[in-house]
Length: 234
Image (cartoon, rainbow, N blue to C red):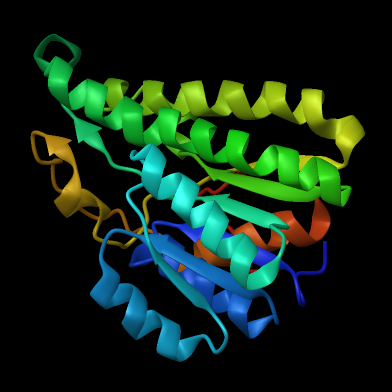
């Protein structure tokens, strides 16, 4: 899909990967809907993206999701692209995962993307197609101590995405997965559970780097991109 003049909703757009993705889509001519909880940050970002729409949204709140879709339709009349980026981490050994923390990240990392997919699928069917990009994690490809809670939530998102891809292919709706490696964002500071151990010599990708691959998946239809150290930017 060429994103020019397409309507793209980006969740978690107030910082990090979401903000970078929104900027990139805007530069390529998309009509961008900025969705996140921090309205002040969204308003600042909107200045950089002419014609964008700010919708303050808690994606775990059904009323907020309904408002996000209705305001998008009032402003632009359609939804061509959904980037499910909002999420949160959890770092704790399996025997010390707090169930309340686990419930919270399942709500944000699994239930919210599903709710948003269910909100846009009927619209995309009616339009004749669309693209959903779910931001997962390269931890789903590892057995990383401390990451079981977070990685298992993203594994659930992956399976939802893979099955939805098969179910929706006849409707020309692409469901793509991006699995970022370490990314230099606020993510570690916002995670639940114990703090992550120091990264040492490991360096992460920039949010702009990840956004480039999100755009690539939209442009090319590549359905499952795993970002690894040493990959070139696109």
